[in-house]
Image (spheres, rainbow over the protein chains, first blue to last red):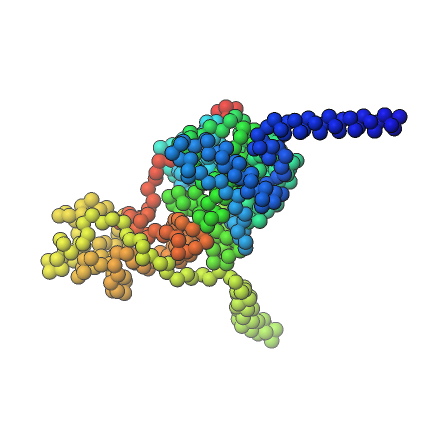
Length: 300
Length: 178
């Protein structure tokens, strides 16, 4: 009996091995690396380099011919001694949604179906911060509207992130600099993280993302704004492709009232530290103990 | 009686001392300084002024320092900036029209107008120097590669309140919530 079982197992092993070898041989090198690799965070520098080079070639084709030379796909690691923090002055925000569309342009979000990483909520001054009565679809010629204030919400980059805990395959994690990232090639699209996130900050590609080729931003990061496939989740990455090169995020630079502040929480002279130490600061849904790195403050 | 006296001594002398002590101890090493040096603004100027230099038209000899409704020029300027108490020559200098002056009489060029604004709006001035009031662009990790704006780049000095603006398009609502 045991003799038979061993034989069957051997047989199955051989069959499976042959099938795997045949599949691998029949596929291009790219597919081979894509299917038989680990999560981005587990790769050796060598493997990262190879995968980035292959993905760069693949992504280049999505750009118009005259822009293909400008395409860069970075896998840059976190800067040492940096923990990013964000501060938003809700006494200044006028609800103009400039940040929403600057983010879409910078991060290659799908235009139709529409994905917005930032959602600007309009709230009644009388009610104060009340999500049950917030309106993200306010339609008006001029903002701010009287008796209303505005609360833009994107990923809060929680230190104790429910999304990271809920991912069954480890496709989303905390980077050293505090950014919560998604490996789009590892995400299985189960959307557990979306259910877990109390801020509605994660977005699912229900269809193939649709960005006009001429509007694609060629400055790409593997964990950030590189074009995503259908069926994966995406979210704000603090503009990882910009901030790891020292630049401010796109939303900070576009804000016409200067309500958005960004910097290194570990640097006592940074703008975010100044805000935290001198202004009235609070975090959204503090009672959930998510411990966001995104702070709202009253600058006036 | 003696007890009351003791209590009074406690209230008047010891409690303020305690409070002071607590205040002292809140300064810990590495605390963010509350005042910042003036940022390097050599590369930015005030918003374009069509008619600069002002001395092309304004002659100190014929200047009229009387507060009045302007009729010959600048009628388009509507002062909505503490207009009951202020007028042109509180900021613009009568003798040297190409300069502004502080309350102290010190003359300053238009490039340093933020010092003038800071006389009344000290809290904004302090936050602006720290990079918290107003917009900064460039590099979060390198002040030398940051672009600042002067007060007058965003606020018209004659009517500084922010005017309402047109918002960008409404996001698509999921059909279920329409």
